Amino acid sequence: MALTANDADTFDYVVVGSGAGGSVVAGRLVEDPQTTVCVLESGPSDRHPYIHLPAGFIKIMFNPAYTWQFKAEPTANTNGRPVAIPIGRTVGGSSSINGMVINRGQAADFNSWAQQGNRNWGYADVLPYFKKFERRIGEGESLYRGREGKIPVTDTDWRHPVSEAFIAGAAGMGIPRNKDYNGPSQFGVGYFQRAIEKGLRRSAARQFLLPACKTGRLDLRTHARASAIVFEGNRAVGVRYTDERDRSRVREVRARREVIVSGGTLNTPRLLQISGVGSGELLQRLGVSVVQDLPGVGENFRDHYSVRVVGRAKNIKTMNELSRGPAFVGQVARWLARRPSILALSPSHVHCFWKSEEFMEGADLQIVFTPASYKAGFVSLLDDFPGMSCGLWQHRPESTGYVRARAADPFIDPEIQPNYLAHPVDRRAMINGVRLARKLLHRPELGPYFDHETLPGPDVETDDEIFDFLRQYGSTVWHLIGTSKMGPRSNPMAVVDDELRVHGVAGLRVVDASVMPSMPSANTYASTLMIAEKAADMIRGRTPLESASLPQSDRL
Image 1 (cartoon, rainbow, N blue to C red):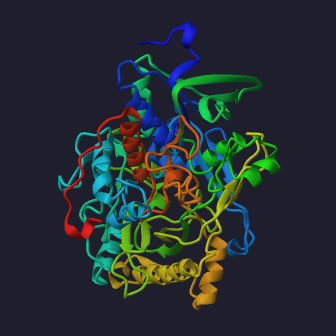
Image 2: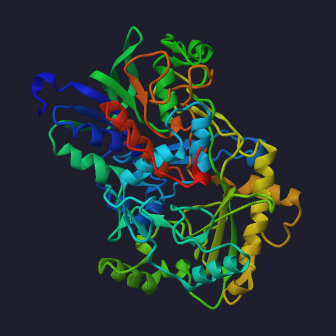
């Protein structure tokens, strides 16, 4: 059923946001031949070539035309710095600007979700949905890997002697090599898997949303900033939005069945709050009429706080040199010929999932290694010397913060407070993580290429000195979750139930990373795609995919 002039502003579903969650849900919904969907995206189209060139993320990340340039509130644990948190504001959302890494996490992460009262969210339940979105190109056991999905998942094909030496050094420390960390076990070291194919980023929009537009039943509206969810009583019936190019133009689009909010961990709670769903006390301060008092909206905010240990390289050219002059021309030529090239890399080359304390049974740290280095305090300027970087973060931070609207005006950024390193467990894990990164860089296998440490430098030795380094140089890695926490109604901080329906109202769901009740041991992109695949089946009233038959150690 194609849209006509008479019903162009009324659809079965209205989806706010075209990121990973919105793209997957919208694309799946229009697979039903009579269903119509409108998707509202605040940003522009994704036609900029740097979006599709994997290395181009560094050019797009801080471009306000394609990103929300949010900042976290400063604290003593960030040395009074406001930490920049740019997120995607274009078709595809952050799937159009992220690092493209596909990393699911550990079985225990999702079993924990189920144990918090979320039925059918254990690892055996969600694994079929991880498999559903992916088209794995490479090794992998059929129990764990999907081969027929829309998102291609490829192995890193560009190799470098420094990366090989880093992997050998980790193995020499007793860290096992792991070719498929998305398989039976995450533990170990190896090369990352990513959503890149034939040298190009394959975003959720390109794989799900834009093909669905060709049905004639999906209306994608760009430059459309959602300003309020429209309610009749306690039922969501539509969305009011403002044209980003002319703020005097305000329109409303109606939903016959449901409104689905997929704005992401920062924008979703802000939209709920300015629409009357959130803490009654906050809404009163904002001058917003209360539709549903839900104190958990915007709370439970978690993020991965990361820092880099940097070394100067010797006896070899690193990506720092390959990105300049004649060497770069050569890399461009390789990319054009569809040969392995630095232009088709995710920013993280090698993974190392390990533990911050010897007594631990599982990994609580993620270490990412790249034969490149950035100037101190920057994530977009390569050093002028040959370098290597060992980034790290704690898998499951205990520190929690909040996202709260400052005003009812959708053009005023929310107050964002992650409370990085507020919990002592987080501080201890990160300090130990820096020590582990240093050990890895000083392994004899890396010796032919490692010259000396430049950041934090050999003068930083004690726990207090390392903590000061974390405070001064730490930053986000854009793994934002939790502000619309999934949980039973009996949990006063829960925002959505285990079918992602907002508590206390009708016709309203949230489908994005904000529903995660706790942080997975991973980059959050893959889990968001999984959530959206599972949500689409729920919304369509389809029988859930059959739970996976897992080894006893991975079951609830």
